[in-house]
Length: 300
Length: 173
Image (cartoon, rainbow over all chains, first blue to last red; front, top):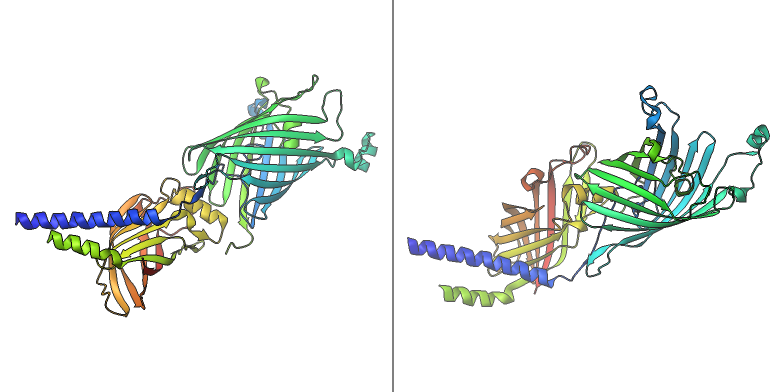
């Protein structure tokens, strides 16, 4: 009996061993593959600014953002919620998995701004056959300031700027690395050129560097943060560096970002050049971005 | 006995088949939307003389209709960065290499999905024609058996079990 048991045991072991060897043989026969890292960030936005992410081919993303009044307005104003919010309504479309185009309308009283941008993923972080440490995305944005139109200008006795004077250009180069499935970080140099500024307190050309990160708690919940450091601040600038923290919550087709920031800007021009909240005074706003993605054309 | 085993093992080398064309489909039939994904990048080796068979399935190669489905599948359900492959290691039982044409057979062994291994028996069909071998099977995978959790926040748009269809074509190695 013992002998039979030993033989059976031995044969079973031999058989399992054979399958393991076969599995090894299978693995050896496979060509080394390049494994592209995806989902460095959950959405195309981190707080106010852009991330390295692009939409998939044929995807249309609708982004709906609000920034409420300052939290330090107190309980009577429900910590800013009663105030008139700054709003951005935006659409972004994935032409390919790496090339996207977006458009947005920002409004807050008379501060209106239209933004139009092209986004291209230049390089993808990868491991395996082709190893590359970071994902790099370039974004070129054109902003147009519609206010004041001819009527507003006449009514308020202010100059009516030419089309050229209403335009600004922004170039951003996002460099991000997903260090682990939990932690991602991004650094981005940003250049803003505005055709018309008040030279007593503003520059035509502004340079900033943004730092952003994500820490994932669960499959659906992440902590996100972002900071813009301006490099050539005008001596009389009344503005501040933009900062923000928030929670990124994903529920299938929607991404909810609940955040606190000192900035009204939801386009790169306003973020860099017109962040008016002084964090030291508690000038912080509550806000949200809600993103909904629709697949317009099927992948197959 | 051992000697025989060794001899068989040596002879068996010539009896190995490797996958040439592979196709795996899964289908989830749920209230809100049906989800189908296909994968043509798997691989397999089948040792006809011993019956030993192994499969390796790269999870990120499942292609979906919508980009977001693929993203959720990899990030939320399969945790692909942590578990990049599904495997099957086992034996094909009931296959007669000498019989030409179609016959029933059963794959018995260990199926690993999402890092969880289960003992399974999958009935299927083997088609032997002119040295080319085709393996076909259709079976149900229960997400709970492989600790694939449906995130609480995600809308209930995926079924708790999915139907898997497998079709592999083999040629001698």
